[in-house]
Image 1: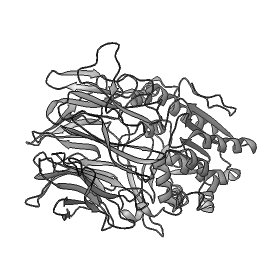
Image 2: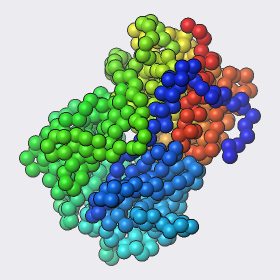
Image 3: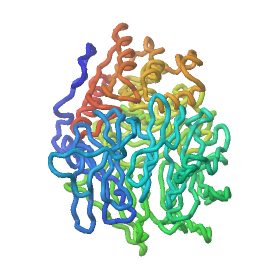
Image 4: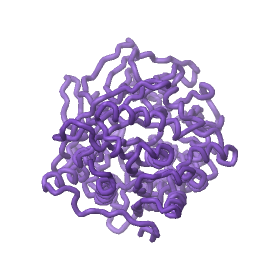
Length: 619
């Protein structure tokens, strides 16, 4: 149950559109069954796991490809989405939290289902609950991490026995990857004090010296490393990493036992990530540039880079199956998500099709690059179909993260705003990924205010280009985007006619006190210290500091069990709005940092669009 609130509640309309076809279309985009990229058991590739909203809530499904059967594994009020398979595929691991609060433990059940009336069992006895901090399951050993207010703990469990602590530290960190022969474990850590730019340590994971270091790699202040995985060959000590030594994310192969490394210069613009081909001779490359991505194969022996011919859009995830088939998830702004398989002969087909009708399509995105003193800001935009030329009410959808980016991918939310007659603008402000390390890190020391300088530049472009009606511009965002929305309403009141802030940071000092420890570590790295150390900086970057300047009506949506943007700091902001007689509405729901329930999502975005239509001035 949501907690009672003295703040005025948002209206949730029964229908948004008078036209039945339009009403059906927007609901179908949110409700249409979707599936994630399935992951297979390494030694039993017919056994697969994926998540789907087919039941009305995002849950975990088991797929036996040989038998052609699908089984819903979990059925919880607020959904389940974190899962894994051991190499033999005999059991399913899933993370059991409480009402979306992200704090809990791993549990297991048989792949074919547990007997009626029985519950899943603890995956590894002796592991304390926490926020998940990585998992790698081998044939004999399992490494898993958890974060709490006391820091990070990593356990190792061998041959189904109890857990042994392999690593513990007060700083943020987690499991990176275990070598195929399970002798080595790579972890990421921030013992140097900067969780935004982690280091990598390789530990022995077996024998009397378990937990002792084998190798360490840290590129220095402001340069992070990301673990992608060990080569999938027994006895092969090569570890694949992402580095940023040349100002963008690139690939590095590191022989951790010989301590020899190879930087891979692929000659591609933008940034890259990768996974191994099964024999360890090649890499599957996901290349991201200007909000779109492509797939490539890189032969480590010859140095040859080959394009794999995917359509224009965004690859959400990709992996190589043992037979060499590349399975990947894909979508574009116009076309809904699909899970596809790319075969040796170049044929590309749907790999996993959810039941029912697919989601209706939407509009394509166009690009603009807005010049600023800090560099060009990439923005994506779309006009609603059928609207005459001329300035339109415009929603600036500010993405979360901040380490994320808006891309040419399908969004039921964007499609809804377009159907409601709004133009939509996405801003890949400084702080976004995909545009180099300097762009991503430019917000450090002045978060929020820096991003909003870029949003203001794109806002000016949208008005000057004739896209946006300056009297009917809406700031909208969730999580970090919700934070930016509230901060924009207070620091740029002349630009905004309304705001929609979902699960936002509203009072940064209170948020820091209540949020999960990994986020406190992130905030310290982002701001340069804690609120006690830098009170003025936190005050200057906190929306509650500017609440008296807010003039536009605002809708605030928040989860009762949110560990990332906790409810108390949202209430602090709303209390201040109420005290000064601000125009606002609230929507509270009984889950965490977002909802995995389709009906709940429909209510939230129906309330958001209805609110904006209700408060905006007429054209």
